Image (cartoon, rainbow, N blue to C red; front, side, top):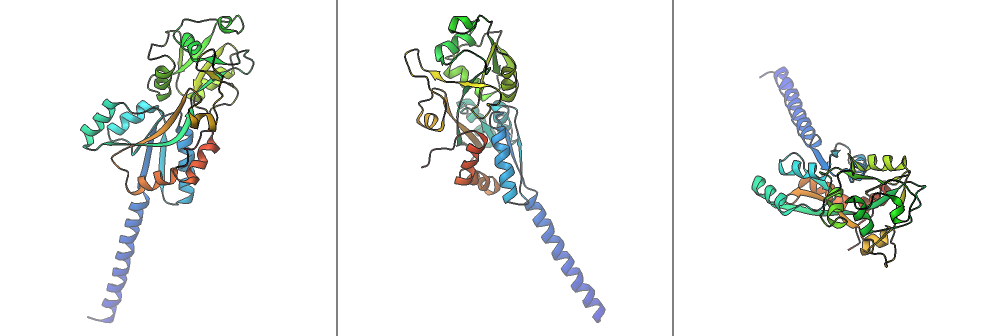
Length: 285
């Protein structure tokens, strides 16, 4: 074999090795983590993703909302790596994951929230008891004058029924009774806040991070109890009556890039982002 042959052979080997390495790196970097679910959590999930990707070039995290129910359905069907949910998964939903994937669901609390009651800034209402809220949302009270407000018909906004916040509110405020037919449902907490901010006769509910243009009302467990405003201290202690965890769910124990991202979310840096967005970090262990 002459010198030209060996020269070409060596070049070919180098190009082949370079090509293989490029493909491997491309495969690793193109691995996209999908996060889907809670509209309450979507702004938090997006902020986590933005910061994580900025610190880990080449990593891709796609975050979409649609509601906790949508995220859970996607997890069951294998359509997402991580489900964001503002309510705990139901036993039947967990069974469906096991039946479909032959693995148990992994539940991971990632932040704290207080389901918040919003009114227009000019509303005369200073606090609500849980019973008053139940009376409004089940249709027993329809005028603000009946609970110390002005003589105006109440316009009450709710989340749609695939929302984890809707399910939480129905269980913890309505005692699982049905919402009144006249309650107006909106697709997302931001839409509820926007509607309430423009109507003095209205109220709504949603996550603590959504507070622009409205006033947050403290809650009493009953008429003799102290009215409690949601805060880091009252939510962590459970003193605020509508405190809750916000969750990630995965099929089985998270591994690889998914585990690395979740570990970062639970790290001090990831938990600081909860407060920056407007939610609360988990209690330190």
